[in-house]
Length: 80
Image 1 (cartoon, rainbow, N blue to C red):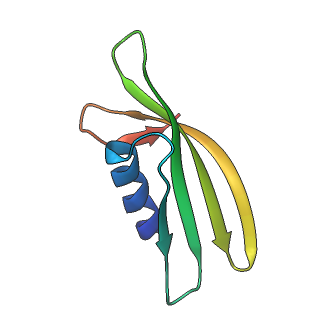
Image 2 (cartoon, rainbow, N blue to C red):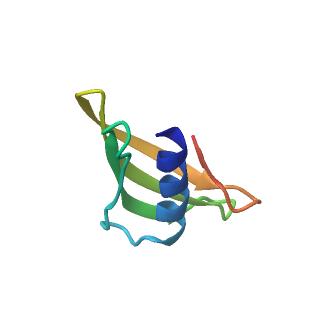
């Protein structure tokens, strides 16, 4: 699930407009999640950052989380 979620997070933060939800599902485990970028901005240093909501359903437990990630020099999104 970690690889699915991580890959989806990278592509969603790189390509999806604010407000567009992308989902993943692991058919083997039944776990699923979704990522929705909420706000995109640039820091004073010119680094692109995005606030996003992540919803997870893992092992019968669901959760909603709010995170911020910024794009590094290698074009990877990393959590703050």
